[in-house]
Length: 217
Image (tube, rainbow, N blue to C red; front, top):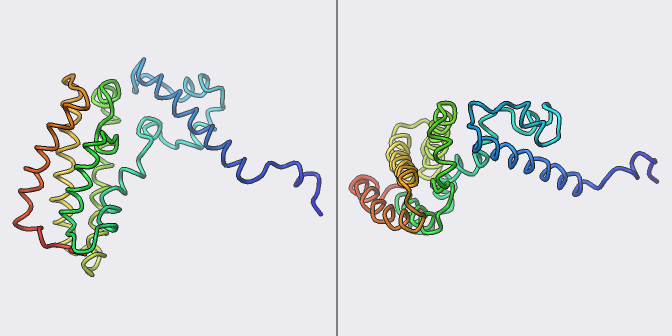
């Protein structure tokens, strides 16, 4: 038997759906404001008013203003570690990461850096977002170091997986920046993909002498 309060409450699935809708609405509204008037000039109060929610609702979903603009942080920071964890039998970490990047470049995946010119300009023009993006690259590298340590049975913090992660993370960071540069230069995704696929082979190839046989599944 249920009470009136219980019976009138929406199902858990519906509540979660409503939360996701609210989160997406706030994110979409914020992105629109950031693109039209700049990230630094836009306030949380303006976002809340435009989304027709309370300021506290905005900060409950997005504790930091940067979170509103960089809305795929979890996917970004986990991406390299997830690739290593899911590498194929007989595949090294280097080979898996190279393969995953080439797939991402072919698909113009935003996680690889394909953000579109307006978004790329917004980030480039904002010291706050640029700093946060650097932090996310660091977090992604740290997660990769842990995944590599687990893959080879080393302790987390061991210098070898940390160094390997630094090398592999640097290649991904460089390619991400390259995609952003080409985007800001006005190139379309198809042309950018063609360019960075060739350059990625060169960049990853530089690591083969030291990492070709490292962390083989």
